Amino acid sequence: MQAFDRPREIVIHQCANRPNQILGGDRELVLIAMLTAISLAFSLGTWWGIGLSIAFWLGAVAVLQRMGKADPLLRHIYVRHIRYRAFYPAKSGLISSCVPVSRSWR
Image (cartoon, rainbow, N blue to C red):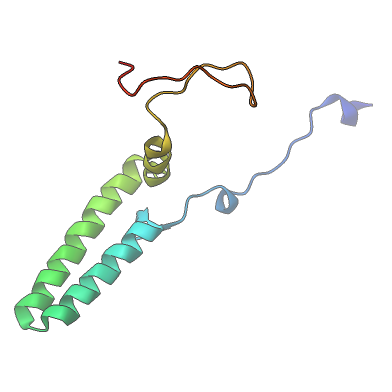
């Protein structure tokens, strides 16, 4: 009976719960910055253009690393914040109709 008295423990592995990051920043943002730097280097095609693209790459990775250290899910939270509407009218159910609200409700 002693085995059933304890609550069951489940191991959650760290690799299954960790956000995807490359070089300490958000994966998609780092790859977009790399693609932008490479396209900048090829489009300018000069030595100073290559230097400019390397400087852009290093600056972007530094900023993205600070963002990743502050909050690894910052991009996801920002995108969810942008999707929110400014006003949600009150209604009693999913199918119910709501009172029309003018554009200048404030």
